[in-house]
Length: 337
Image 1 (cartoon, rainbow, N blue to C red):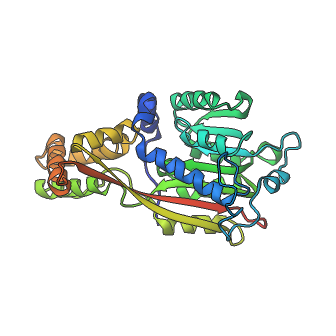
Image 2 (cartoon, helix red, strand yellow):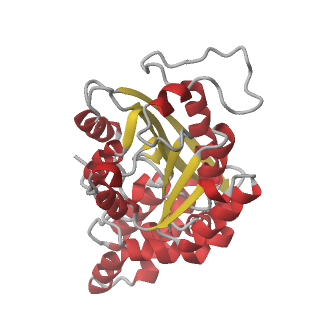
């Protein structure tokens, strides 16, 4: 069973603060993930809410889910003042997902949580420019896991609830994914939907393989480089354990392959979307020390890795690939939880 990402959230926050302004320019796979997740949500929640959705589509294309519609969602609200759909975006970043959700769910109340205050500032601007009323935008600068733990500890009306909890390209930062999944489900209103896109094992496998080759070449013990990711079995266990009485789950996967002129350019793109701390900095501190004790410097390890990457994966056109494995998951909270 996957234990957790084991990342230093302070480093994560620093990296995202540093790269916030250029994030959207380089976040190719993250943009696709947000698009694909919202498309699946619109297929599952009825009626189709985004403008331009073909009117001939069936109201609910996923038969496992029961009566997912706005009226039913908001009718179960404990808030007598507002019947707007309440959406929580976990790890919102620059607002890629929230902006798309605001179009799919006009008038929704959006609560955005992110470690990076600079990311939140950009997200707020993006939503305002998209026509979302500032009154419907609630920003929370916090580690999502810590915030969820605190929110679930609130009693009665003090505990927030949401009709939809969504997240894209953020769950990989969870240090306690089992507990955090439980808390996410706790904050769902009756009939609520948890929808997320996240990375799977095999993501940036070219990088992991190149590091392994470099370690063998230099006579170094194998060490993890970058993050590990939960697999489908892990997610199913957590969702079924805490999702109530036989929750409906929609699970789909996709593989995305991007190419770059050289390895350094590929890794620079990874770093510019804030992930460099997990790929080349955070987990490599121990490895560099081990390498130096064995007579191989950190620079030698990186050089050997770059050569192995180029030699193993370079295509006929001279470009090198980087692969992302992604899961899209929607689950509905059981009425009888």
